[in-house]
Image (cartoon, rainbow, N blue to C red; front, side, top):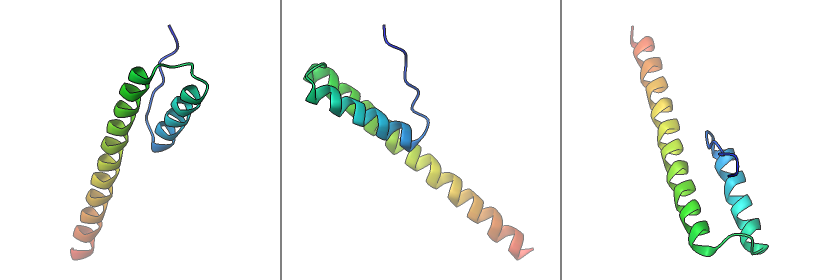
Amino acid sequence: MPAVRRLKTQEDVRFALSSIYRQLEAETIDIPRAKAMIYCAQTISRVLSEHTLEERVKALEASTLRMAL
């Protein structure tokens, strides 16, 4: 069983998608598995983006609150 890849950043997701693409080009991965992996990577990417946006909004709100005081 191959090592589990941890997708913690957008760059991790990009590398994973690139790897899947290369495997498809080399025909070393079957299409249904690649589709499932791509779907999961895209979902993780959206969650990471939403989390980043949420953190930025919190920081802006905290900054605005400090300025108001």
